[in-house]
Every structure is written in structure tokens, then in C-alpha cells.
Image (cartoon, rainbow, N blue to C red; front, side, top):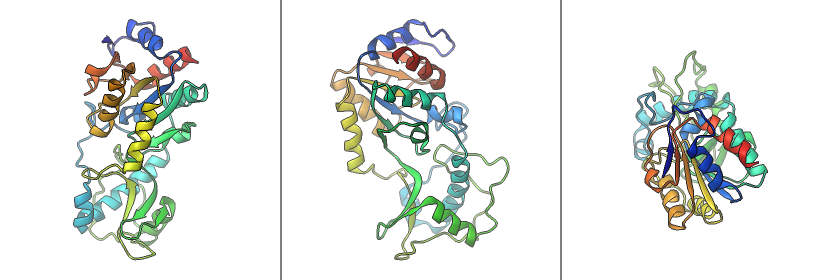
Length: 281
């Protein structure tokens, strides 16, 4: 495996040049993670500077009213902050590669929607998104804006505070949530849940199959901004490896897929993807 360190800014470094050689002329399947969105102001889960966090599990959400209330307050404040973020150069580079025909499809572990806002079209949001909320009982789907308006109507004290700390899943920890009224389904009164995959919850089978098709239809794989600590992403890298696809990983720090990579670039995603896009288009 060819590697370049994060301290090396030279875009002609051997690993970067090798990545261009491997990807040029091949249709590329892309997998992205939270590290891609850090330059948009959304912190990574597992980087050295990541905030300490206790993610909501599906079991806690459905089984503990207090934790569900806390989640809804934090998720609401985080969603409002998420909505103000913008795609960065890495998102735009991947959209440009797709427009040029080099990227055939993109799978993201992020729920921020920034790939779509950057112009990428063939996108599988593996862990869901924050644009909608669904009822766990009857399946009715609601636009997030509609549910947010209800939440603020019933809890007028929920204004976005200055300096709110935003997590990778759009959740923040508010100072108080004990008296907050959480929204329920207007169709059946059931529990509402944002359409994101919680810890302890399975990725829907249809979404997994769509992600696998992107890998199966490609001739190379590019991973950007993911430590591959979550199996849903690592399995796609293993799938690409079994098919003999060349694999390029761009990430600050080690990943669980490094031993499968033909090239590992330990560097920031924005500048590296912009350089790769310039060389490949």
C-alpha cells in the first residue's frame, strides 16, 4: 500500500499520483463519512478533537420517555444549526466528478444532506437523513420543517442559543429538557422519529442493497472522511476488495480498511478531493 502523511501538502506526492493513476478512466464508487463534513463546521465522531458524546440508541428512544424528550430538544437545536451549514470543497469536488462521469454513485454515512446540496445525484444516504420524520406505528412521514414548527409552537422557549455545540448526527445537549412537550403523530398518536438510523438499529435492507449495487457497478472505490469503524461502511470496502477493485482511502488517521487500501492518503478531504477532481476531470 502506498501512503502519504497528513503533514505532506505536496499534491504530486507518490500516494496522490498513484491514486490518480488507479482512478483515472475507471468508474468510481465513493463512500464518505463524517470527516468530509468537518470543513463545513460539523465535527467528526472519532477525531482527536471530537466532542465527548453519548449517542441515542433506538432502544432508549422507544423505551425511555425522559431520554426521548432530551433527544428531541437536542435534535431540534442541532437540526436548525445543520440547516445553516454549506457544502465544502470536498462535497463540490465529488459532485464535479459525478458530473464528469467519473463517479457512478456515492454512498454516505452522513445524515447532513450536504452531498445533495452540492449537486451529487446518485446518492445513497446509508444512515438516513434529517429532512423527514416518520411515525414508528403507522409509518406516516412528515417534513422536518412541519414537525419543527409544532415543537416550537408547543415549546416557545426553544430558540437556538449562541454557541450551541453541534454533533455529527445533528444532536446537541441542551441544558434542560424536563418540561418539553415532544411531538407525536397527528395521524395515529404514535411515536415520531427522525429518519436517521440510531445505534442499535439496522440499516434498511433496500438501502443496503442500493449501496452494494453502487460498489458492484464500479471499477474502483474511493473512501473519504471515514474511519470505517461502523460495519455498514466497512462491509462495502470488503465487498470492493473481494471484487478486486482498486481502493483509495483519504482520511486523517488510521481506518479499519487501511489493510485493504491500495493507496492511503492521510490528509484533509477537502483539499485532497479537490486535487483529485482537478486531475481526473
